[in-house]
Length: 215
Image 1 (tube, helix red, strand yellow):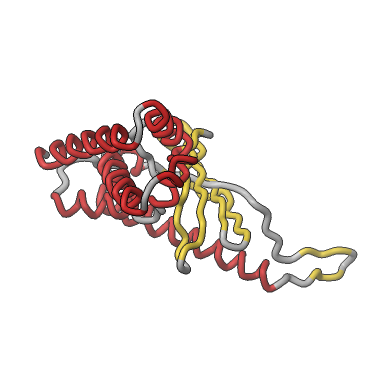
Image 2 (cartoon, one colour):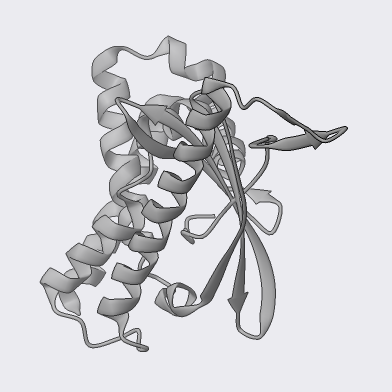
């Protein structure tokens, strides 16, 4: 539940140029802009993937503390943890104060960042970008990851925030990351409340930090 692989992608429809009865159909300004954003997203993900692989260098061990911090930033830096956390808490989000929301997002992000380093082999995998579709401020990216001899689809759901594309969900082999957190977190909120959820998250974060410091 807590492991986090950072590889995903997806859907919408983009048209650039069509020929109908020999005549070119004009491309609208919005379509042209969406096509430009699609290329920008591809470049962002490819650059991120290359930077991660350059640090891993074909291995998944013997990293300095600075390299581990850099990996955590690269792997998780394009995730909108507030948006993902809000989706994970669902209807319970509106019951929280802004202070509680900030506390939750901070600890949730810390847990995910540390857990993202639990299976670094995955980030050495070959990634192909099958389709990137943009519609206004939303995007869906479909990739295929060659992992342990198998092709696995990884989808990214993105939104544009302050001119930056950030992920709100990562769907690994048709399993939603945000959906998985939602089932877990909302079950705890429903049965035991916010304090119990935060205690559980803090315990996981403390354990992850201790393990990282011991390496």
